[in-house]
Amino acid sequence: MNPVVALVGRPNVGKSTLFNRLTRTNDALVADMPGVTRDRKYGEGRIGDRAYIVVDTGGISGNEDGIDAAMAGQSLQAIEEADVVLFLVDARAGLNPADEMIADHLRRLNKAAWVVVNKTDGMDPDVAMVDFHGLGLQGPLPIAAAHGRGIRSLIEVTMADYPVVEEQERLLELESRGIRIGVVGRPNVGKSTLVNRMLGEDRVVVYDHAGTTRDSIYIPYVRNDQDYTLIDTAGVRRRRSVNEAIEKFSIVKTLQAIKDSHVVICVLDARDGLSEQDLHLIGFVIESGRALVIAVNKWDGMTQEQKDEIRRQLDRRLVFAHFADMHFISALHGTAVGDLYKSVNEAYASAMHKWSTSRLTRLLQDCVQDHQPPMVKGHRIKLRYAHQGGSNPPLFIVHGNSTNDLPGAYQRYLENRFAQVLNIKGTPVRFSFKSSD
Ligand code: GDP
Ligand code: GDP
Image (cartoon, rainbow, N blue to C red; front, side, top):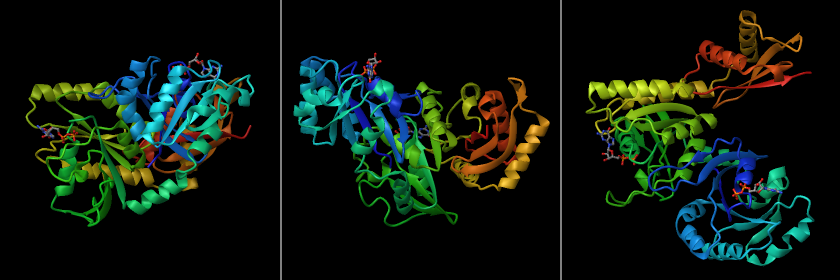
């Protein structure tokens, strides 16, 4: 499970700048779900051998009421879910009364909270930090987010107590069996109903120890001789009684489940149509390189007209997820759940497949023969051989000359041809180009 880092601080101290440094893309997931505040941003990243999820809690305004409200409400859930809290302050502005109030709140939360002094560029770090020693939190640590300075050691120091990527993977293997399936989606789309259906099937045997601890969200089981582990973000197995309230929907848990899955089933609600949040979630799955199956739920009781309309909408807006199988299901009635497994199994097989270097190089040469890379600056880009660099998602490493100049359209051509010829289904594929000049 990836540790969660929350960024807290007044407006303008540099939280967004640090967020962008820590995450791989600027394509943050912005929360706009019911019951979730709008100005929180979520992203994932990795520096060295540390992978994490980052939450920018949004600015905590300077006045006392604003701070109290933020620390009781919007920022609090993010802070509570975080493993590491980074409290940003501004070296140029110096210590501010609002900083002291925020620090007060953080001290009371009993969390690993670090003071991070930003904008130390052009300053002596010791001088920059002198104001901030008395806040009673860990640190201070100097950075210059805008210049990328101090970021690596910030991560190394504040995450020292959490497992590195390799160790995370080892623990995940220990706690799970077979194909890890994450069931994700907005609140009320039918995740719990689907999870119960999947685990309640006659042919499913859930391993005894599953769900015995309240924290255990991995549920290992066997179905038709295949081992699976369901990652239960809906909290189905953690409810001690049917009446116990469902845990608050958590984007952080959703993102962690995606990262931990081999295959993600993204559940949509046919009656609501496709929302921005659905698109963000699917985008996050693809960005994480996970295999994907789309389940359009609540298909029961829809009129033909409604069905046609939603099909049109999905075709139009899910082009970027074209590789994923889509099923129209009813979790309530148990319709088409078996079809989901067929797609999950296929997607997993594709995501984990290993291809030989000779097979991939032959395919690359066929692609080049059918359609030469273009001339750039008077000479032709050469693609020589290909080998596999990873799985889940399949990563193909292509060696050649001047590959930096390879146009996006040609990369997409390779992606499509490789997926088609190698019969890759349900998973994104990645390419990496290595140039010997
Ligand atoms: P947020 O409101 O906390 O998210 O702050 P922003 O990330 O939007 O940054 C506020 C301003 O501070 C912007 O103009 C940034 O360019 C600037 N800034 C951020 N980091 C640094 C830094 O390391 N050094 C300097 N000099 N300016 C920075
Ligand atoms: P979750 O918040 O995503 O876990 O959603 P739930 O599984 O709790 O379902 C939310 C509501 O949708 C409940 O009232 C379910 O009975 C209903 N629901 C779930 N699946 C279906 C379905 O396939 N058809 C219909 N008509 N209702 C469903």
